[in-house]
Image (tube, rainbow over all chains, first blue to last red; front, side):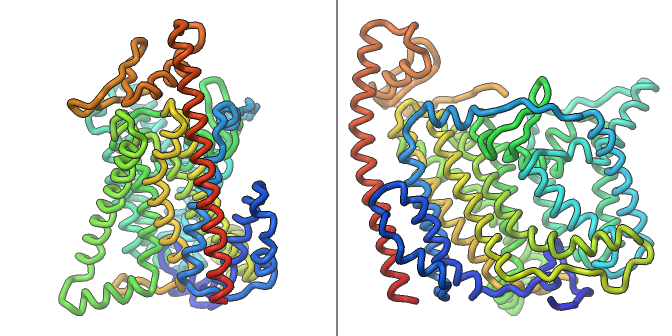
Length: 485
Length: 89
């Protein structure tokens, strides 16, 4: 634990909450492979995997390349294992399983709205007039620990609570109610825009999050929240709730994460599903929806990538050659998104060729995009769980006295083994994604060989992406150069 | 949400169209399997049912071969890592 409270940056509180030790992570690599080997023990061939398991009990440090390859292999192996499940009725039973839930939704909604409005008021008030240090300021803790860490995790682990909590939605409902009273109608949302505005909005919001010191400067954070809120309320007042379904990047992000969750809203109440199984549901075809899902995964990765050493070195070299930092950050960000979307569409095209199908590339792309949300959720959990755990006592003590918080709010010192949770979360996300894509392929193709072959390209992309993600979390945190913090 | 599957068939490619829906397939076997899975036993004629059973059998055969290959790949992967860890650590 280093006490550099003043250098908090962005949504990642790494410097404050932990010192990353790649060696510790890498020593877990044998464990990770042993887990896959254990899963494979179902086939008798693997009955003698004791060698690796005993290696797991007595951790040895593996080099980085082997650690990364092991992670990639775990995903590749889970594709092979999933492909052994060829019983359509079993897949349908797993994905169709559901129980209806009785939730006091009305009560929760009223409570959620009150909590949401109270939180928004606190963020604005304390952000502007409260203590200037990030970790002592309620606004910073509410936004980054309670909301980005807690509420978002709750969204994919349990269910999407954001529509009930979202204070801007409450304000929009109020504004619409008042407008209806005086007879001001709504504007029509142009359908041809699809959900593209939310793709652009998400890219812009994360761009601001990465480049501005939103965790260091409570007043700036409050101003950004106020700006976002003004746009949201104005847009919502103009076109109604369509704003939150099609345009607002935050609501759409949380709705996307909510699709991973076990609890879902149905036409007549609430239902419980197995986690992730709703990701294989059929949805409408559209490049805009696909691009949004790819953007969700991409922004999470970019957010992690800019905090690595090699990134810092590359940026410093480019600036040394005379490129303005803002240009490097913005161009790499946009080009990176183009590459990510292109790589995904290429994988979908590969599916069309390998599976020998006439399903349009757009259909395939939109069918196999939702599983990526499981990966994004795993990555989000890996990135935030330690921060939330470490800073939760700080949040509690600052909530108790927002305007006169303790000089250095208490934080939890986390045991090193908790870092294995990060790897577990990333792998769990990928394995879930592999399974869901398998199930979606079975729903699309009449021939089971087509279903298996359609996943070749996507699996290669996922293996590469797993290795990239594991590399990012195993790199020590380096503050991105040339950003104000 | 609506169920939408668009089909785009390259010109001059062999196509096998479903008579009951918009589905179009690259091989006879895919079409036979599609009829049996999507349109159900009751709708099918005698010959379509027979074609479905035959397609099923050939699909099973090929799946069997695939399983052996996949198992082989898992074994190779497993031992490759076993040796890699033995050498490196």
